[in-house]
Image (cartoon, rainbow, N blue to C red; front, side, top):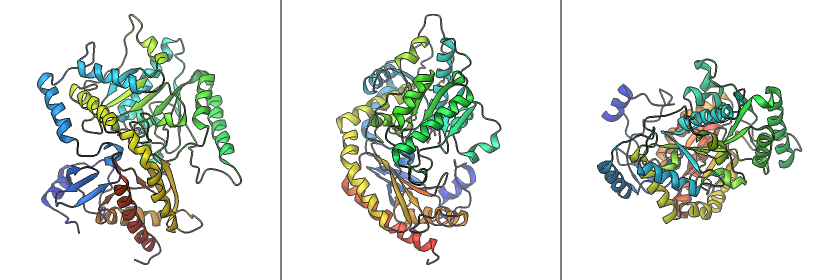
Length: 458
Ligand SMILES: Cc1ncc(COP(=O)(O)O)c(C=O)c1O
């Protein structure tokens, strides 16, 4: 069992403001100090399978420290810092060139940031400048999806569609209309097949644009597979439909790849899986596999072209964006991806991961298993009729029981009820069949107990 109230845990409670963490959780505070492969270890030496890749970041796991530390040391000794404001440095240039090579289509230009929220806000500011340069300054609105998470800094928060994340902070900085998401488990009406559901969702996007006035809408921002709500993959044809709508109205299409990018769905960009090239792609997390904090907005030729015009100044900048240390680490991380077959591993192991998770449908508490690549969610339900958990059951199971029981089983996964009650699973992209089997076994054990707790048997 985990020990609670160690001096470090106590000190954390006294001084460390934990992000998005509910105070008073019955589970002991997890204090991690070491990583190895897909595993992390706490200060008491307990080992956990990181079934969430440290919030979808640790693509290559935790065993590349030595290699990346030598890259970091060399960069820090050569040039510890320089900006990309009116100047440049070799690490940022090399990374930009590498990204341009790897990205699909004409996504050949990069604006660096320090993380996901900054990438989303930067995309918005690039989009606005593109429209202004094209003589369309009236394009000031955006379309995003219900329950989608696009970050919580004040600009990014406008796009985020989780009401209680926004309530305390006043009117959104950017006018955004939120349309239905692609929940294929709960969304389709009786008798509505995937194609009809897709058509209805796209009609709703079109109607939202018409309601706002097509020439006032600047961008559509969506994730390839939406995280919040539980790995909501798109119905077939959805992204092609978005592309067509955006093009018809002169709106820019932004794929938020902060989670889905860099291999999570087995491609450099998740949206490649759905056969579309966006106008911009917002990235972070997997760009460095989180060996350093960094984000990047990938920008198409079309969008970048006016930004390079002589005499024009890009009205946006972030001091640490493109930091040499982070850029050097990102370059090597992308090299590791290619050298060690990270995308290939995801593609090879996805069927096994899906099959092992699908077996958990046999448990009455598992209503749905959905996702793609190494990005999955299990929707937890009350019974075989897939009855949703009520507020009290969510409290008991998602907050009261699962956090502690998962840790006891040596597994990190995320219970989440921003939409329906789900358990998120997203292992490091280096995970082999054995790790996947271990993940599935631990999930089975924990969810069997969750069922008992739900029905008052434990
Ligand atoms: C899709 C998406 N966009 C943006 C963000 C914000 O990223 P960050 O937390 O790095 O600011 C996140 C964070 O998880 C995300 O999942």
